[in-house]
Amino acid sequence: MNDKDALLLSNFYPKEVKINQVIENNSGITIFLKSITHSHVCPKCGQTTKFYHSTYKRRIQDLPILGKSVYLNATAYRYNCENTSCD
Image (tube, rainbow, N blue to C red; front, top):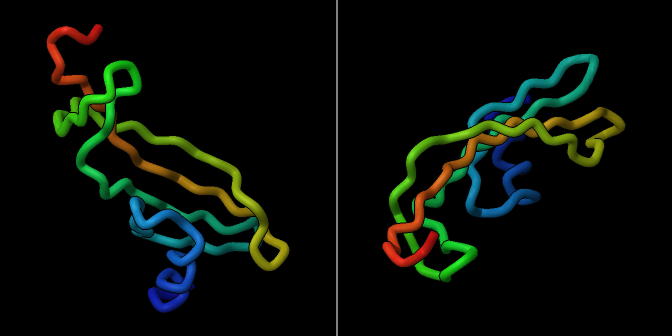
């Protein structure tokens, strides 16, 4: 797939992720996504934090495209809550 196809694929994924690369071969399609958000709301206290301490990767199987298996390789951020009273 070329860059033009990647732009069309972006309509199917949340605006909070960017498609960095798309690889298509006989066994399927792999889409490399990266989070573009730079803040997160703590699920315990509800405070927004911008302090991330690391990234992590997940491989997710998505719905097929044109009969081919689709895998998402997503890179996301891990955040620490900045609220000192939150555990």
